[in-house]
Length: 426
Image 1 (cartoon, one colour):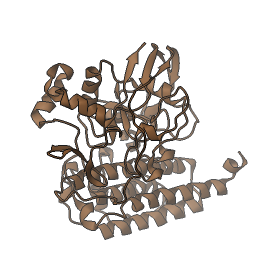
Image 2 (cartoon, rainbow, N blue to C red; image 1 turned 180 degrees about the vertical axis):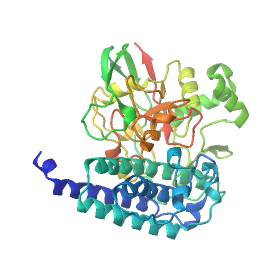
Image 3 (cartoon, rainbow, N blue to C red; image 1 turned 30 degrees about the vertical axis):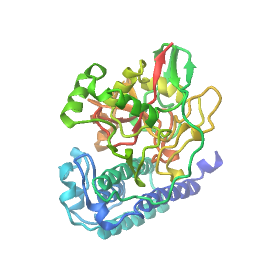
């Protein structure tokens, strides 16, 4: 407690965290060439260079511009180019056209990052208000989200190339055992509290207020659905059976020609999967990845069970150690459940490996109020047409995830590191 009360130590801690997060982002770009960092492979994907610039724009716009008297932006046009969706700050450059820009160069964006880093560090070392420090913390968590997006986006970019280029070229350690024999872990029903505790450290506004929910007894599968299990669903005609699909999902199956997860390919040599290590033979023990909510829901229906609600997931996630295959492992791939030593009578893989789709639409909690000003656009404006995912992935930093964290994507999204955990009623 004495350390937290010491302003100088608190400043040093936040400065060190700021520099650590910013370095980690740059480190993720080390395997990439400049040519890799300027491509936009679809409207939902942003070029790597854009992520590097936008995360700097956040600190420049919300921290430096607000707290430094007479602050001069690095480049006046960057306020327009690298705004994402903060309409109260101006008209953002259209998201689907981020890949048409050849300038600024990657080198110029890196100079922009260094400029912002120096200014923020000077501000923190000189001392500033609690409000500014809280916005810096928000900016760091925002950047950690973009670290994961950077990897999901560059994977989609590389996957378009017939050369099947790898982001990393080291081989994964061969895992032993198998993931067969799915087990179930039971949880009691009743009135339970969910949502972030006030004063429990950083959280996004959409994680609160803490409130009560009524749950019926339920069970969660003790691991994620594997590639082998999902392949069986495919081979038994899962993508040809309309009775398994929600109507909007079936429309996508037919309209987009879906026949398996995003990066799977079937050929004469069997089924392969594009990964951050290039194209490899499908590992049946590994969790199935890059499936949409519609695919996860159809698989659960085919298996005779269902997806968990986000509140069921949170109750389960609150009872296990926050550990797993997260970004610091630099594995850059989900691991099989057989490689994990979990707690007794607790699900494995709740944290890390893959984000897990839930059956819950992304809606506000009772009593929710978005932050004031432009920062109020961060989460609240997206509470329509999206579903909640929980648990983080192998690209999620360890200090960025918690039991109450609510990720969200449209139900058709497949390029994210998303997987499936099953649930059933008792």
